[in-house]
Structures are given as C-alpha cells and as structure tokens.
Length: 187
Image (cartoon, rainbow, N blue to C red):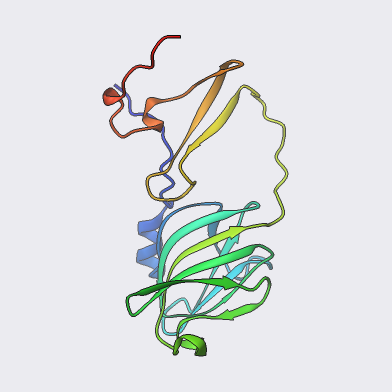
C-alpha cells in the first residue's frame, strides 16, 4: 500500500540548514528563511555570537508560524505583521511583542529582563496583508488543515468536494494509524 500524502509541516531542508547555517528550523507554515539582502520588509533576527550574525525570514501571507531554535538572540526587527516571538532564557519562557518595522531588544539586549542570553523558539505572525489567491484550476479540490498549521501534531491534506456536504480526503490526515479509525455510522 502506498503511503498517504499528508503534510506534517516539517521545515524543508532543515538538516542542511542546520549543517550550513547553525539554525534549527523545526515546523511551520507561512514563514520561510530568506536571504537578508534579497528584499526589504523581512523579519530580521540578530544573534550576538554566531554565524550568520543576522538571519532573515519572510512571512508569505497574512499570517504564519515557525518553530525554531536560534540561540544568543539580541534583537528582532518586525515587518508589517503583528509579530510575537517566544523566547527562553535561563529556563523561563516568555512571549515578546515585536514592534512593526522596528527593532525590539530581546535576550542580552533587553534591560527589562536582566540582559540574559535568550533562545528564540517561535515566531507567530498575523494581522498582515492577505496575499491574493488566484482562482483555482480545479475548484472542487481544496486543502484541509487539522490543528493549527505548522504546530506539532498538525497535518495538512487535500480534499475533494464530492457532494455539497461531503469532502473526500485521506484517513492519514487525521491519524498516524488509519486502520485504527472506526467507520462512520451510516445515516
């Protein structure tokens, strides 16, 4: 039996990025690693002692999520989205609102938290300009997301509208063990 095509939101090429850039990118949806010199309007993360010193991300739609681990973060510059960063410092985890299009000190640059080293764990973007979505070539085919996109345990699959009230998709979209699913009762 062929495996199901289920999107688990694992970051593509994460092992190569870790080896080449010392960045741990785990899961996500809507936020991707970008070349800092490639364009303006990126989310910029500055690390105190690491190479590369500055790491950039692009939010590709109106919202996004990325689970990652970047140590020794000192400053984050927001883009046009409402952006929250989850950071960990000396075992305590906190959420930081990142100013739109401005620098926000975190970790050793943040006097309010005692200038302690910080690890960036999550970026969550929202409230941005929605990307224009072209009309689909196959309007009866869409996407199904189970859980919050990019978060641990979430999944994404395609679905086909087969009746005004019925969508056909893979059982693997709902569980790692499809044979364990009980059949739905007939109506």
